Image (tube, rainbow, N blue to C red; front, side, top):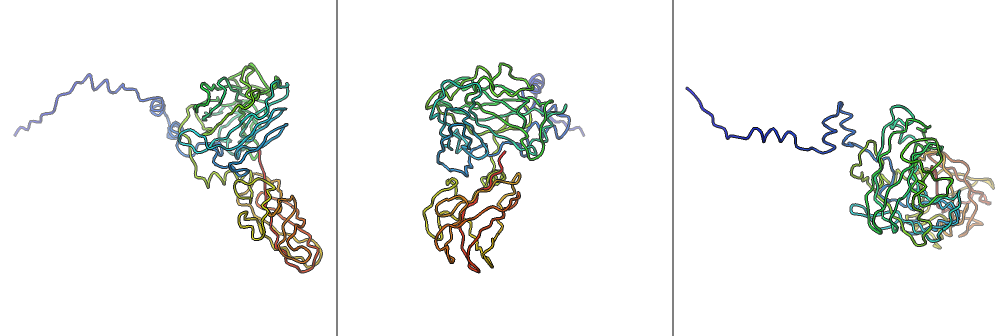
Length: 401
């Protein structure tokens, strides 16, 4: 028996043309991948962002408050972004609720005192310094150095060319380039691809592995006409870049900062608030509630319901020193600098004693004995024998790069 099967006709030329349809940059790269790992790198699978707090959600020092950055000062508008006013100009720095779609916060700089004639050695900048362990996989300083791509959202009052640079811990082997703000007071998305650095000395431990410098104005000592190339220098901005610090009241906002391996920017990697906070606490941890800076005066009485200080019961068997240990929430990058503040009025190196002979409702001395990345040993001299003293204080532990 003969069985006949009929099939709809089709245009062979049309079907062949479909094989040539564009599949995009990523698709072409993916099809050309020779190994599974190469394909994974092309699509940026897994954890990718080497920047900590790129969405500006964590601000342990001041919450939504402001800070006056002036007269060669150093401080943080949000965690992990270290800013300098290395001259006579000044900024108001803060976390802002003004952000592009997909983000809640940004860091914000407002020129509060203009520096209209920047001296040769002056500089104004915000940086993120990345720990060496977190960039060791880049292979920089070797022939296998991988390229990276930086992406971020920016909003500025003054359109123009803004300087940016990349460097190792010694800041003596730099890559200087720029990005443009095209329209005033408008969120714009920027991407910059940096070739892998085959030269230079790059730390792969707890030191500074890689630094990024966003420039607000530098003097001639730190500017250069040589850009878009790695080389030995201590330069941080193009000679023709805009100097925002010269304009009083000028504003600059930034968020969505991401640094990833490869030549293409991908969607921002949002991490949970708790995870981002823990990453920040490796470098800075405080027992103060969010939004309260060091030395804050709560002017409260026991039990300090709104400030949640550390509470120790120091008991001395005689008039000698009594000591106790406090374990940090997150192990620090290195032995931190620890500061202690009275829980009531914010006095440095004091604890508020709620009860105890000779110390009822008053401050008494308190001191750091020693520190490690995991804890701090704290001591006090009570001045009374066998008396319990409920001592309340706040701890700040800092191990920033």
